[in-house]
Length: 242
Image (cartoon, rainbow, N blue to C red; front, side):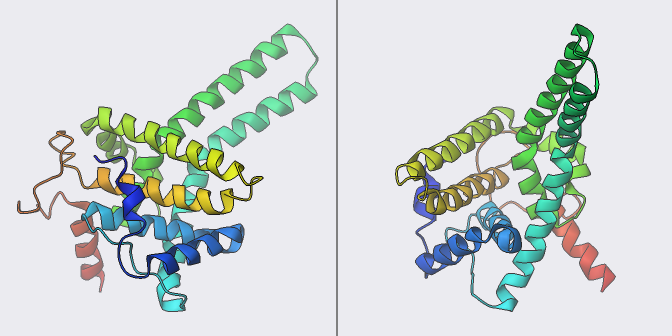
């Protein structure tokens, strides 16, 4: 994987400046337009998984943004489910601390709950790339519950996956530090661009030959098995339903 390639990828293709401007604007109005941004992230994962070197198409139109909105909404809801146990555990620990007497037994119970919440939080963070990749592949609303495909995706190239998680964190940290230079306002520009760069990396990982566990791009000349490829399975399922 090329961990610096996202810095070139964002500026490839026609109208890249217009696409980035649209995404930055949609990121400003977080609640109503966040699904559009998240949907475009999935579009990048799909494109890079197929080794497309250009940013996916994006226009200010219902035809262009409606599919992105649905994709992004599906992704955000799955992240909500993934991090829900952490929220419940933290709220439960706070309630226990508030309602119980200030004793050593209560303190131990609270810290135990917070420790479990931290473990769930770390596991959820580690699952983020896998959720992006599987959501981009199969278009399911239940990706977050597909634990075995997630585990297989991580195990097949564990070293590369771990590097992916670390580099993704470094991209986020660099965006925050760079954006803070302009009294925090720079994050309006750097945060959404960092998110796109990270999804380009997820797309690179999605394009690896993960079944062989080699960490190298799969040979595109090799035939694809329709019985094992989740994208083809999804397409066949749609065709059968219609």
